View 1: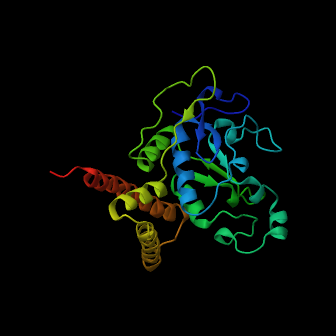
View 2: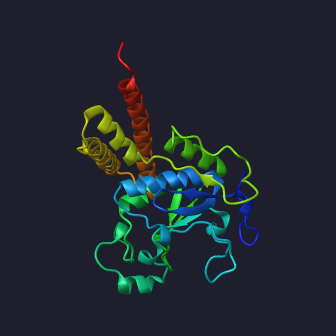
View 3: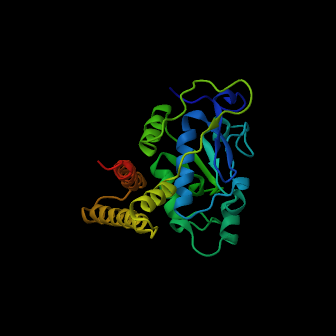
Length: 261
């Protein structure tokens, strides 16, 4: 099934509210709501703080300065920390950019490359790559509804997405709070070792870096052209491994919690 056309016929009946304990209330299309919540949790776990007041989702409007529907009007787009990652002309970005730039792009953006790769690996396009008017705050889901279901199941193997086909008639339906990967790892470490030293998180991060480095080298050694889609597939596979590790940790926790005898 394809997505609706968006603005001006916005799919308001398909919009739910993603809720986080930090105060974020983000309206999104229900088919991508759990995925969005999980990716924001992982974004925070990677060290990038998502400000609830500066992060936006569904909005029934066209693309700024045009009559074309924005993906925000379909409930398929997120703006992360908008004031720090402004939508502006390429010339404005070149004049005002300072410090380091993601992917070598001279733009005003404080989102780490690792966070952008995480989202891109799971089917989201990043507006910072736009040539004429970069929009580094902007992330939009580029897959189909079937893609959304598959990615959601892979990212959240222990969490069932909302099962209601229609939201309630009054008030915004809410996506329940899901424990983040970081919180779950910390909780398991505390229960199994009695202390939190970060070793588990560091192990996963090191394995992630090593996998990417090895596969990139392998691609170059074989003389292949390193395309964006290829690298995204590599990162995507790394996320699959992380999801499988999450499931394994839960099994370990259940065994640890089992009474003796």
